[in-house]
Each structure stands twice: as structure tokens, then as C-alpha cells.
Length: 297
Image 1 (cartoon, rainbow, N blue to C red):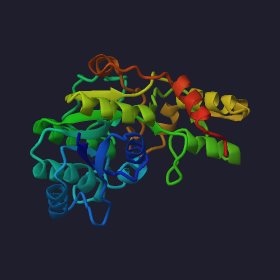
Image 2 (image 1 turned 90 degrees about the vertical axis):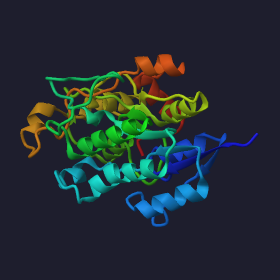
Image 3 (image 1 turned 45 degrees about the vertical axis):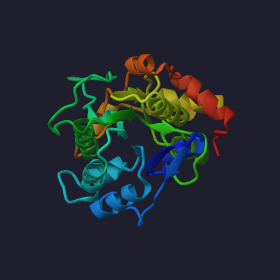
């Protein structure tokens, strides 16, 4: 029996590389830049025509939220070109609805007026007010995919035990803790994390059941201070040395007062029912990652 052919964009990234590593039952096409440039319509058409995939998983994105803020409002900038125009190039070249867009909870404001955690069927805003520029570009990309009939998988702060190229939401602070340079952590910001191994499992379940719609992969909510302190303690460090700060006080110092969603997070109830999955708590994710080799070094 022939394997399902899947084009994976961003296959060398933090999340995409782990998906390719874990999902052994598919035939992958994982083109890299500069041969494959998602912002180049001709390049996208050529790769899709050459490989003729049955599914596309779009991990490719400009994900540096801080850097994205410097391009606020610029539709000629790399953030817009990659996140929005790149997504549009994919759907223009791929008539099938079997495309999964990896998205984020930052398509929602995460403020007190419309707080998370958000359900799969919660309506995303149609204006960029109260969003980061990164969040707005991912919001627009979602619209493109849904208008095409494709699917959305929203994730938040993806984490894994090992990945040399980039530190994630856990390994970054843990490294700084071990170096004695950890910054004060928000004690009143609501966040979730997403275990990348479970992201990979979710994508496989969508494909294998030929499902479609909007899906979420995340843990339950916590705060950055609670999360990192728990991990440090579990790894034998002294979390009492970590300082706390209010996200509200920090946002007063920022040009964009919406730089950090205060009340973020994703609910997974509908996804779990639809795909027959169960997502781990954030404590369990930390413990599994430690068993996989997560450390303070």
C-alpha cells in the first residue's frame, strides 16, 4: 500500500522537524529555501506540481513576535509576505482542501474584554485592534485557509526536549536560569504550552481520519512564573531565586500595549471529542520532557 504523500513547509523548524521525525507512515516532500520559497508563487507552483502531494502541512511562518512588531502595518514586509502571501500562494497552487495551517492563539486579543482560553469555534476578530502584528498576519492566513476549505491547527508555545537550532518557551528560561541571567517572570499572565509530540499526533489523526475544521493542541492554563518554577524545581534547582513581575506593569513600558496577550490559551474539548485524543496537563508535559532529557544545561 502506497504511503500518503505530504508536502511539509517549514520542515526544518522547531515543530515541523519533530513531526517529520515522528510520523513514519507518510512519504514526505520537505523542500528548503532557496529552492522552495513560500513567498514566490512560481516556486510554490513548481514544487507542488513536481511532487503532487495529497496533503500540505504549512509550518512555515515568521514567528519572531518581537521582530514582527517592528513591521507593524507593513504589508510589504517579510512578516506579511511569509505569513499571509505565502499561505495564499499555497492555496492558489493546491486546489485540494487537504491543507492544514499551523496557527496560534494570538489570532485572538487575549485581553480582559474577550479573554481566553478560546474554544475552537470562537470567532476571531476582523480588525487588527488589540493584536500583535504577528497575530494579525496569522489571523489573515486563517481566513485564507478557511475560505479555501482547509483546516486550522492552533498551537501555543510549542515545547520539546531537544532542538539545537532554537530554544523554546521552556528551554530558553531554563538555560537562563542555569546561567544566572533569568529575567523576572509574569505571575499574572494566563498561558498554555503545547507538547510538540502531541502536535504531531494531532496532525496524524487529522490526516488518518480525513478530518477537517479548526483544531487546538495545548495544555491547561498556567502562568510563566508557575510553569518555569515548577520545571526548575523538578530539575533540582532552587526556584525561590526566580523573581516575579506583573504583565500589566510590563505592558506600561511597551509601545504596543497589546504586545503580550494577558488572557491567552486554547481549549481542546471539541478537538479531543472529534479526534478521540486527550491532551496532557502542563505539569505532565514538563515531566515527560524531563524523562526525554530536558535539563537545566
